[in-house]
Length: 463
Image (spheres, one colour):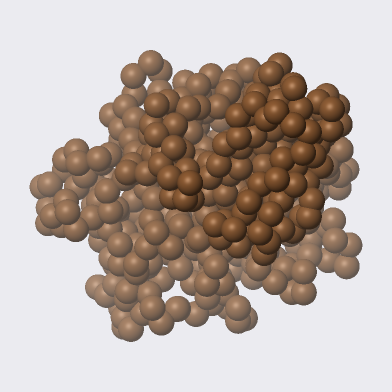
């Protein structure tokens, strides 16, 4: 059977309602209003507290006694204000540079650069302010920072607040509010990427701002890049009826318009009292949900690109703050299907995080939790073990099930995008010889499902 036939099986499988049961495992506790989770290219997690403090959470669950950074004295926090974003430079290991997004004591947005000290667990407190944005109201501040694969720093700003964007700022290119900004921070201050849509603007009071990359957002909380293809995922908090998720391929085109305040959700008019683009010229969300059953405000997450949970691969995780549900978007081949579930732990979810290995975390209350698949056990050797050889492979892989092959219900192989490429049901011998001639080179995951519902997964590399 050819490889594409297996892909058809995968898409049908998802279309028929395949989903995971999320289980949260406590990873760290004792934080005060955690609002962002980031990594610096190693196994530490940096937890951003709203009041203006960044702490280091180690893999054993301990928190370093001395904060990585404490700028509480210059941060105005409360409500939707505070220290809202953290991003480490792609070359952090050589430059020691990292960037923060916070609301200052005057109520305005500040984008600043700091540097790590000689002690890798403590930052210098010398601040270089790169950009300041006046905020007309105290809400809708956005706050997320992240580097794209192009090396530029992307910044999410809300529409400046109040309700319904009364100043129509999200569509106004003379203001930085309601936008995705993109700047080059490789120099002493910052410069404008030449491919930004208004890079040649004179930058006068009536001119478009050259920092703008995309427009038409209400309050993006949060956005992330898919580490495999640089797709941009933006969760935009809705006004009073719909929450939306935007997926923008690689990461979209300079000048993209996400529609607010003219439109919200998928093809819903909101306010067309001023000049608005036609709906078909805006980026339509790939998914939306309404405010039924207590839902109110989306918290954006990540596409899972870890290696521990093969059934999570390629799925987008998000949450709702009020209903305390965690959602998953699954690619069915023609669209994205949405499921929401209440996990084993209930909190008002404020942020997701991704570690260096692509595993996902979520913050709620004073705690950080790791997101796991309740149906999957990956502790090799605890219940069952098997061998793969050779690995890396080229044309064949041998799966040695030892004398436990009678306990195996199903063997499945998934590609890096979470697509199931082959199934072997109820093997009748100890060693399986699997042809991989039709597999493209790359990383795969081989999952052995046992009759007792346990699952064991191993990486498989095809040269």
